[in-house]
Length: 141
Image 1: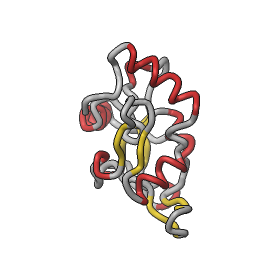
Image 2: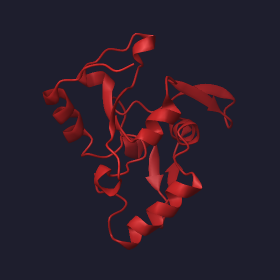
Image 3: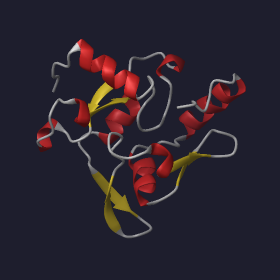
Image 4: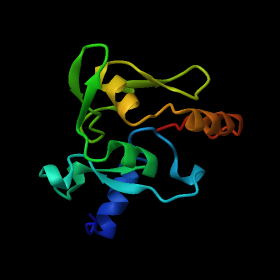
């Protein structure tokens, strides 16, 4: 479902997330696609099109997240809420691997988000290696 998001609200969201995916922290300028304005709580679950419920997402993270708000944590054997990029601080749940190519989960929110959104799939790790060599990654947000 497509919904209108004003240009002003789009600018605010881009600024808040430094033109990077709120989930995997890929910088939009490194890709060949436009990032999307994602409803953290989906419209289908009563989410609204307001600043507090929107984030910038790469198409891949947005597709894998879909309408999910939680995911099964294999370690705790419980459903755990995915990262809410408007309410939670990325660095409290994730860190970069020493070589900057993989996202390391620091807690259950990080684990389920990395797993559900497939944030360390081989293709993405491979391209991150190239970005690291170019001095373009990880982003300094």
